[in-house]
Image (cartoon, rainbow, N blue to C red; front, side, top):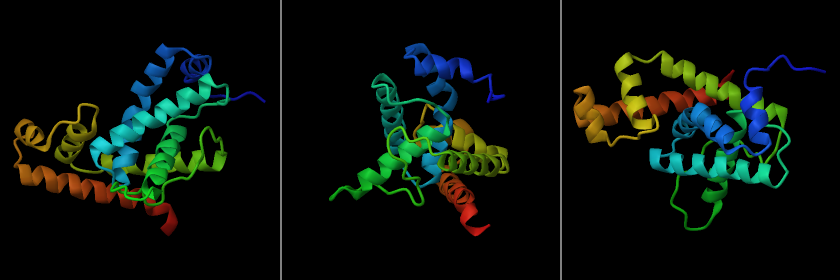
Length: 186
């Protein structure tokens, strides 16, 4: 049975064959979505970046070891990052915030139901973010969009007060968290 989904197949198939450039392109394409998903679940931006990077590295290691047969993005990397966060939260003495409702998919898992859930959660978070005022989206983009600017720098760039930037980010995280958890209430 052939799949109609051919466009992303080029980078994906190259990555599955070990192309570093293809992995870099996939990280660039899907990295922001992974960060948005982790931040929406309550992780601090720096911690979200660390876990996203660790998740990508796990997938690359799985590919190199020949244990990654397929690659559905961004769902698989979001699930992997969620698993890493839960694993970390279970360690005694760890002070990091656990991800509420995070997927518990082990390394390289390809559970179609879990991938679909990850895509649905991400899509709900994207829709919620798109429904927010432009200024809130701008603040969110500056805070979590790869550059990860400090709150004071965001305030300077947007003309908002530092307190308003922090309040906006707090409100957005709450909205995104609720959007992700929405399925439980449907």
